[in-house]
Length: 338
Image (cartoon, rainbow, N blue to C red):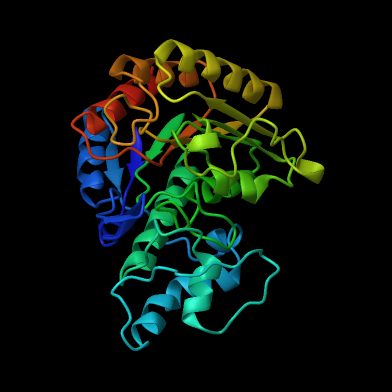
């Protein structure tokens, strides 16, 4: 299986993570790349660096205002007297229609949804190449039945114009848009333990891309405000979004039952390609402790997706530091290849 990763993706090294009012080290560490790469290689993946497809494909999903912010904010923030090493907002806009300030502090509050997406000196470079890896995977899918993208930093919490939840550029959305421009009819299946709120927000008014997310019930789990079952899309997109929230602690059999429902909807959409936003934080060993999927459960997930017989691009999302992280990826990707 072809796989994509650029070494510049390791440069992003976030330090700050606010949990229950306590400052902790972010779990979205560069070491994730080492463990995930080993897991993918154990499944037979051969990694290559993506070509630079430029900014246009990223700008097809994200606003130019937001992209300019990501590229310039760290330097502008550092010019402030007494600024921290990382850009972390201390105020947030109430709505997207609120006034857009010139101040770096105000813009940070507009473009960063939470404190889990601090921006450091190398964040833009890493996020850019993470997105380029996703584009490379999308273009490889024209020649391959499946491909894997080690997108890190991840992307599914990023909206058109807003970072959040460790995410800056929405890699799965960028890949789906690129596939669509190649002529494919695309569905995005998000199997991360957290709802793909950014992906839903990007496509919720569109009927041409189906978005499906299986995740822990957001009533008491991040991202809280999005991911509920009644959210079915807006306007032309009504009916093109499916959320399947499940109880905390969900195990293999219940998860696979929900996945069968998701795959039935995808097959009914009549798509030519599937982008899987592959979160491995559903694992029983993951520090977020949302679900309790076992290693064999991951093999069953990969086999169920492969059974659809559709070209499938696996784009890495969550999955945090545990000894099971790499092996769980191996299980998915071996099954994905039949």
